[in-house]
Structure formats: C-alpha cells, structure tokens
Length: 414
Ligand SMILES: *Cc1c(COP(=O)(O)O)cnc(C)c1O
Image (cartoon, rainbow, N blue to C red; front, side, top):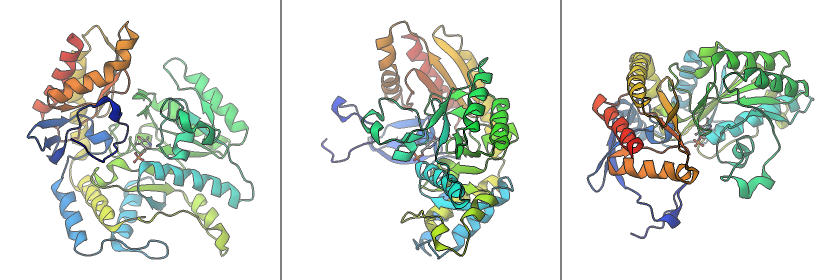
C-alpha cells in the first residue's frame, strides 16, 4: 500500500508492517484487519485510565457542542479556568500559576523560557541550563538541546545550545552526581532540569528519592531554579500522582502532558511558583511572558483534562495503580529467572529490564525483533535498544498482562 504518510521514528526504507488501528478500548487496540493488540506501552506512555475512557470521551463531545477554540491571549473560557483551578487544588500549593501549551516538548520549552525570563526580569541574566546524563525532554530544538545527544539528533547538533551535564546517579555513584550538580550550581546557572526518579527515553533508568531530594536541596541552596519534567512520570506512572512526591519535594517549575488528558488529546501545562510569575508581572509590556501557540488551552483538550481530574478525584486511581504494580512485579519476578534478564526493576506501573547477549549485532536488532514478534502475537511493545519495558494502561486485564509477559518469555527462549 502506498501512503503519503511520513511516520515519526520510522525507517520507511525497511518496509516494516504498519498496522492500521480502527478503534480502541481499555488496554486493547483493534486493527482494521480485525487483529487485536494489547497496548503494553500505553501508546507511548500517554494512556492512563484506558483508551476511549467513557467519561473523557463524553466530556469532549459535550464541549464540542459549546466552544471549539478561542484565542487565549487576553481571552479565557471555563474549561481552562476550571482546569487551572483543578490542577492547583491537587498539586503542591507553591505551584500556583498554570501556563498552557500543546505537548511535552512545548511544556519544556516554556519552562526554559520562564527560567531565563525570571533571571532577565530580575536584571541578572543567566543562560546556562544544567541537565542529567541520558535525559530526554522532547524533539524540538530546545528539547534536543537539553536532552542526550546521539544518533537521533546528530544532524542538528551544530544548532543545539550548550548545556552542562551531570552524570546519571547510578547505584553506588550517587555522590558523584551530587558533587557535579553542586559544582555546576556554584557557577550560577539559570536552572537545573531533570526527569524525577526515572529517565524514560534514556532507558527507564531509575534513581532514588534520596538523590532527588538532595538535588532539590542543592538547587535551593544556590538559588538555581529546579525544573521537574514530569511529562512521563506524572499522573500516577511511578505510583504517586507526581514522582516528586516520593522525595517530598516541590519544584519551582513543573512540566505535565501525556496523562494530563488521560492520554486522549494533546495538551500540556507548565506550572510555576509565584516568584517566577511575579518576575514577569509588571506595568511594562516588555516584561510579559512572550510565548503562545495557536491552540493554547484548546477548550476540547481542557474538557478532556477536566474529565481526567474528575476521575482522579472520584475514583480509586492510586489503588488501581498500586494493584497494577503488584501484578507487574509478580510477572517480572517470574521472568527474572531467565538467564538473559539483567537489572529487572519496577517503579509504580513501569516494569523494565535489560536483555544481555554476547552478540552485540543481535543486541542492536533486538528491539525491532521483539517488537515484530510481539506484533505477530497481538501485543504492542517497543523496546528502547536492549531495554524492554512494560507500561500498560492502569485498567489492563490480567489475561492481557499475561499475554505481554508470555510474548517476552517466548522471545527470551529463542
Ligand atoms: C515524551 C516526553 C517529552 C516530550 O513530550 P511530547 O508530547 O512527545 O512532545 C518530554 N519529556 C519527557 C520526560 C517525555 O517522556
């Protein structure tokens, strides 16, 4: 079939099969061809309560009968006002100001601009950003600049801005990370940007709440703004609403997207504390926050996010997440008996491990090979290099979870 569609992160030259999904419910995707696929990665980490959640779909439909879109510069609407109030009610009190955008990448761009704007409006410009090794913050030029460099952004490297990178806090080497952060903070950077507790695209690498807490304390001590990118970790993925909760910390700036609408439609928010908002508030127009996109706070997307918030308020979501964690752990433990499973770990609803193999060529091909086997068995899996992870919607049925682990087990037996 010849399609004009150019897919993201897809090598069209390999002629790999591209299934066409016609509908979805819960943790299950139904292809046009009639095949059924279990969504083991929540459609790239976005789907939390399940696909086509009735409450979220109904909210979008109701909103569609009222108001589709309205300029958000100097104008407002109830879905956005309700959402901002709903967010500030469930998130830590210091994060009192809500700025809307459309994706995780833009929420990070906004966070960086807020941080630099804060220092500039204080008449003490700072431009350096400190990040963590293996980080991922999106594919825009700013997002790539603050993320890990590699084959996926090599052609663009001359355009990417310089950042200071501290080492990942591997178990036993945490102090090196903290020392590096402290050394960087002494230089007076604008901000430190980090994914709390688990680095997603970097390979589901986990570190401890104690390290996160200490990193936050170092930034506070040196008055460096602390930006938490919870685009993946937010909305219960790590077992708590925010990963930051597990370290008892509150960032100066917080990025949320993916599960913000339950994973149904695109929307993002960047929350900021009063000092950051106040640094931009003035009678001088030149100090306003110069950022917008056409669909900032789109009413349909805000309605979906409001339905997500209602689900969080009214349903036992954290209990579901805790139960899914136990169900994942049981299966991960069984799989860990396999000789090639390395470093099995779980954080909240995310289970991950590395596949060891002496043949490195095989390793390079491992991800696509497992992805293809899984597809043929009715499972959507997408390993990160030799890191295999399972991150399903919270509503997944036991039989479907069993199928995911059976497919991985079959692959490891080959
Ligand atoms: C997915 C992701 C992003 C980018 O979000 P998009 O919506 O894909 O632009 C940024 N940061 C983290 C931690 C992510 O996992």
